Image 1 (cartoon, one colour):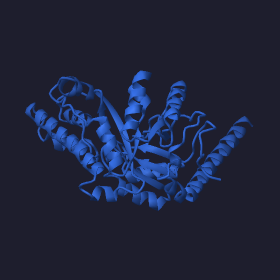
Image 2 (cartoon, rainbow, N blue to C red):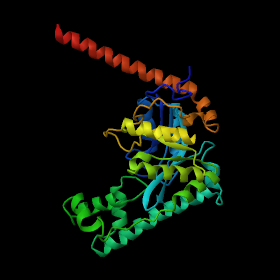
Image 3 (cartoon, rainbow, N blue to C red):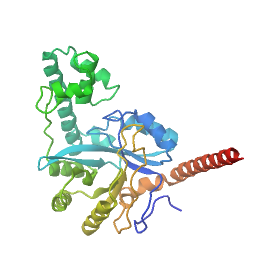
Image 4 (tube, one colour):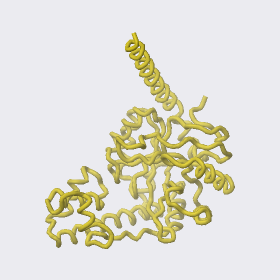
Length: 336
C-alpha cells in the first residue's frame, strides 16, 4: 500500500511528506543537517528544502537525507512581485539542482543568481548606512548575529544594534534605524512574477505557487494571479501551507480543479518551538485536484522513496503507540 493517495477524493492528513521548509541557508533556524534529523523524528520520508532564492543548503541536506533514508527533493522559493505585492514561487527540481547550477546559461540559475545578488547588495547597503550612524563593522556584526545563516536581513542588523548598545531592544532598532522610512529601510525590487515563473519552467523546474491564501487577495485578484501563473507555465499551487481556514482552502481547491493545476503541501517550517513543525499543515479537503506527487516528473522520485518512507512512518507510529501506552499505564498507576 502506498503512503500517498493517488487522488484527494478522501480528505484528511497526508503522512510522511513536507514540500516547503527552510534552513539556515536562508532564514531558517536549523542547519540542513539538523533539519533532516528533525524530519526523521517527525516521521517524514519525503521532503523538499525550499530556502529563499538559493540552493546553497541542498548538498548538505542531501548528504544527511541519504544517510537517514529520507527522500530529498531539491527546490528553492523564489521572490517575485505581482502588482506591487510580494509573491513567492517554489521551483522544484526533480532531476536535481546540479545540472541547473552548473550551466551559467540556464534561465533558472540566472534568476537565482539575480535574486541572491539583490539580497547581498541590500545587506551591503544597509551595513554602509548603519556604519554612517555609528555601527562599526556593521556587516560582520550582522553576520555574527545571523548565527551561520547565509541570508543577512534587517532582523540581524537589529540584533547587531542591540549588541552594540545603540538601542535597548529589537523593537527600538526598527523604530530608530530599520523600520519603514528609516535609514536602514532598503527596499528590494524583485523580478516580475511571470518572468520568474517562465525562468523556472525554461530552466527545467516545476513552478509551484507558494501559499496563495497568505497574500490576502480578493477572490477576483486570486483568480487573476492563478491565470497569470498558468499562462507563464506554472503547474502547481500549494493547496495547504501550514494552518489555513477550511472554507478558504475548499474554495482554493475549486479554483485549482477548474484550471487542472496540481496541489502541493508543506509546513513552511522555519524554527523549532513554533506552531508549524515539519509535516504540519491543515487536512486536505475532499476534491478532484491532482496531488503534486502524481506529476509525471515527480513519480520516479515518489516510487524510489516509497520503501524508506513506509519504514520511517511505521517507526514513527510505533513510537507514538509506545508513548500512548506509557501514558495510559502512568494514568492507571496514578488512579490506583
